[in-house]
Image 1 (cartoon, helix red, strand yellow):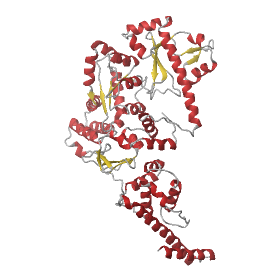
Image 2 (cartoon, rainbow, N blue to C red):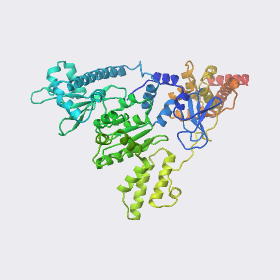
Image 3 (tube, helix red, strand yellow):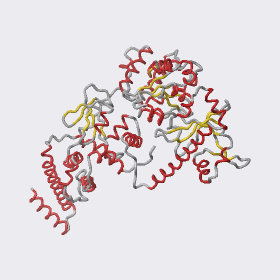
Image 4 (spheres, rainbow, N blue to C red):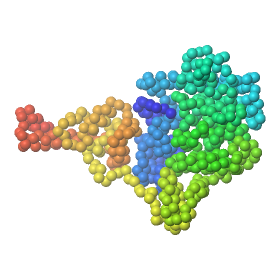
Length: 576
């Protein structure tokens, strides 16, 4: 994932991507006048209150108050971080992330390119070794496991022969990178020679979502521990974010309707060979938040398909708990329970594609698996145990963002524990309508001017140079002058202004101002704005005069301040 992105790139992203086009691909929108309306994806509603403005490149819901630009929408809709959203948008619309101001980023990119090239060369070596004399046993093992030549080459499966490092490696720089940076090589303490950590293993190259080889998985030919070994963590490989087979799944499917998550490399390869080309494997670890975000950014349905034993069921329960925060509207999680002592590889070879796909289609829904496992793991014989069980069940349910789904689960829970009208008795997560406009947020001259400037940035040319007095008690005057000076000679837009204040306390205030409807026809906006500026100038003068009069009463004015008071009164009379 990217670690830094410049303000220049963010503004470029906002300029190039149309918010209507982006959101139309997620929810249904209907055009009414200048705006597009739809059912809000962030709360439960019957009548459309979600509006997208193509001119300002913003969305706003008058029901729950959510508001933002394309980055905000992706963040909340796909449950991603700020940088993850930017990376996803840049990939979706093929906008390369370039930062001309960051030498550090250039160095990191150059270094990573060297690693990618080296890892790819090593992968090619492993692949060639499989078809040489040294890889004869490994190749025979793969054929005996039922893999055909096409699938072996498709996944670029290879072999790491014994002692190959002594024969091939003669470049000190390459050895240093493989040893220190990528962790592929280690030193034999007895003879100080380097050796490959994957030696005498079948090699499975691991590709990232862009198709670059970033690491390897290695399997022993005989079942000696450890049976599987993965590349160590480094600058280009992170087990917690990579999924074996994800690149191939994207390559084979224009639209990914569902993704099957399995436990091992062999499972993925076998499923692909049987034409089930939407399987990915976690790399010797439990599913992580990074995995979930990555998967739900490309599909709406995930099916967990782990081994049919106790550890497999336990792993599915862990995956269920990890999935809870990602069950937003439209996202689905299911569970495929295999027969005891079976895994996807063994079962598909016994049953074939048709029967296996039938099992996939009959996978347990989230609610069925959730309640089945919940009642298996928690038996209660007393009122105290039952109460504890209810709190535990609700602690899981409350993590689900989808309001309607939560309500249905709470209702089901009540039915299963035998409490009638449980939803009415206990609903701590009852929906409360939010509103973005606070009635106490008074419409002052400064706030109306700011609101107009944010909504119509071109009006900034009508703002003259304003004098700021340190004694001024006009709320927001200093910020207004600072705001005008910053954007005075810049070609900016509403969406860029709001993005500039992301992460600050001012963002929420500006979001309120951008929603204000001033009920002024477009052809009269300029005149209204100019008149408000005149009013502000008078307010500034009156405020300064009041201060000087007050100062005169308290301690008297010197000659300079008396001259100022006389001058300001004269100007004020002329303006009025």
